[in-house]
Image (cartoon, rainbow, N blue to C red; front, side):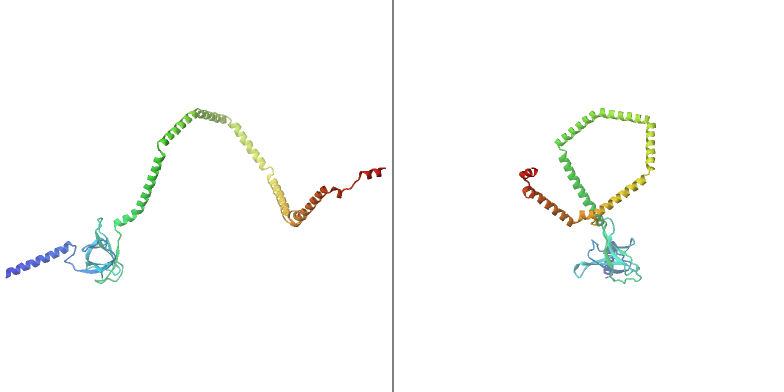
Length: 306
């Protein structure tokens, strides 16, 4: 009987040790009491049970459970267990983040600044952190699009160059280059002669420094004489004449005075036009019927002379 009891006790101890070892391997501290807190997420991004809970880089607990709230897949409840010795402020945040470069998920407990502490079982605000791959993808997406556009442009440009630089075009380019070389060869003696002429001209001018200096001095003296020759009075007289002319033009443009009325009065214009029309009609009538206006007789003149 005692043997059976011993076997039973050993089995219980082995079972308890197995459970404790399994929990220890999962990251659960079986020798420390903890407090449970909750947060609701629309997506847990691959977070698993027993994932670590960290604060300021230290592991302070583990994920105890992940469940769906009332069958709604858009509301996933995450339970964390943290050390009982930690007092968590009420405005703390449970943030699902990446624990390493491989994308292993963890919960970062972002400490709040509230003076009041959350009670065990309270629900904290839950947020999701963009992992490194998502951040890099978001940053590299515009650059990838620009690179695609650039490559397409380069491809188009290369295709155009290939179309342009076909065999016929290459032959034409070679012919143009050959003709250009011939033209340069033909112009080389002329260019040499031109350079020689320029050098000769430069030497000549260098030998005429005194004459050029005298000419410049004469021009300077002439400009000073012109400056002191009373140009200011002449300019004032010209301005006065222009002002008088402008006054006369203004009088002609106005209807005041005989000349202004003659140029601007519509009534006088119509009277003159009527007079001209009447005179033109009279001349035409005289040409058509001269006898009505001029009467003479050859015989009457002879009688009067006798």
